[in-house]
Length: 515
Ligand SMILES: CCCCCCCCCCCCCCCCCC(=O)SCCNC(=O)CCNC(=O)[C@H](O)C(C)(C)COP(=O)(O)OP(=O)(O)OC[C@H]1O[C@@H](n2cnc3c(N)ncnc32)[C@H](O)[C@@H]1OP(=O)(O)O
Ligand SMILES: NC(=O)C1=CN([C@@H]2O[C@H](COP(=O)(O)OP(=O)(O)OC[C@H]3O[C@@H](n4cnc5c(N)ncnc54)[C@H](OP(=O)(O)O)[C@@H]3O)[C@@H](O)[C@H]2O)C=CC1
Image (cartoon, rainbow, N blue to C red; front, side, top):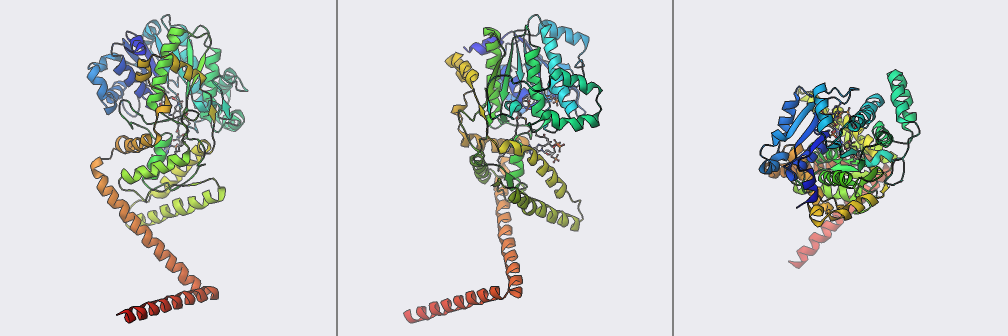
């Protein structure tokens, strides 16, 4: 029997960000391995015209939760959705709900965040710092609380090269930032943002670092731990391989490359691609919840959930495997044939962006106009290139994250727990994982049918032939123009033609002699 699974039995668990990528997998694993847990409270806001009940219903009826229903048929009864908005200072939780949360909660998993890199500082601070502070305040009033697990990111200190499992201070105190944002207007905030974030690339990593400082400063009397995952990718094993449901991190890039929109990228092939599967992060999170509650470490422990030091894979290898997977699992109606040229040079980046991205988009839009349709490719391409430019920081550098606490925790688990809550990335076979990732993107993100693969392969063949034909025509036109303008080109051309003629005459003569 798994000690961790047994630990969560009968518990009341609060999850923030349960409607997000990681939150859903966390909820699924909890319900599947500990179906006798008492209740999972989830803080949800109405969104995109859906009430919270509709949102929860949709999640629980998705493919991700199919296995859960086998062990926990009344899964809906285990989930209690609480209306909340982390953008509001009081989190917009009703008095009755707050009362229930304060009196019943045993464990808190705080996953909610804004993960947008370019979020306005005011909003990023509100969600990633102030909301964390509010939750800690709530936690301090929970008499039954056993552990509070805060999900941060391994990139919260990406301004450092070597990162230990400790909380690093930021130059300006989070409290001062929160206070000043209350009275500064947006224009001034935009102006001071670059100065505040300093050598970090964006407001996301900066506010996640501030969030950690808040955890450190306001966790007195709370049993707390921080988990820092690196780049979270599709599921590795559970509940099934390749599940993914948003475009963040590599998933959007895989689509853009597979559909042939993105054909070159500024990336360092030798830089470490520090991906971790989402189920690995969730297994570690649940193990940390158990360890923090049962062993009650004296200080706040930070756990790195990274792959680079234990089982490194670089972007070059990953890119090649992604391309190889497209051969087997092509996406439907690709714009161009998938290809990925990695470049680290400014000039070649601009060159590829012009030749491989903007020109085909302009040509295609011209074609759409000619055929009476609305042009859209240039706009799409501009947004894609903007997105890629924001990811560049992370694909051109390598970091070293120490993993002592994570390894210590692994050694504390029973063999059964090591199996059920496996977070040992050394066992990950990258090639297999990436192929499943591409398959998952096709199935769960693009919602494409596997039966369409032969047609998709045919389409890629047609694109290849068009590509060859286009290049040949282009070459002939260029050569014709060159011959018209340059004596040297003409001489070379006459030399080639006379050489071919002589060769053919010789070949014909020798074959006549043989006969
Ligand atoms: C073959 C080679 C392959 C090799 C693999 C290479 C993989 C490289 C991947 C590197 C990942 C590095 C990530 C580092 C993560 C740090 C970890 C974390 O803690 S943080 C956790 C991770 N956090 C993140 O990853 C957040 C990254 N994303 C953002 O911050 C924002 O989306 C934005 C600022 C980039 C664009 O904002 P904005 O323009 O206002 O608007 P929207 O947001 O509404 O989206 C606009 C359009 O872009 C689309 N799209 C969105 N995302 C991606 C994507 N990743 N990609 C592509 N496309 C993407 C989106 O669908 C939409 O399309 P459409 O509707 O127009 O058709
Ligand atoms: N994905 C990654 O690569 C990595 C993620 N992380 C961290 O992991 C955690 C989870 O990330 P992930 O699941 O990928 O992110 P998602 O963007 O998928 O999910 C974010 C969650 O936060 C919720 N949320 C956002 N704003 C509010 C709000 N105002 N009120 C209530 N809830 C809100 C979202 O709810 P809603 O559905 O309503 O928008 C959603 O449930 C985050 O803390 C992130 O920093 C760390 C490293 C890498």
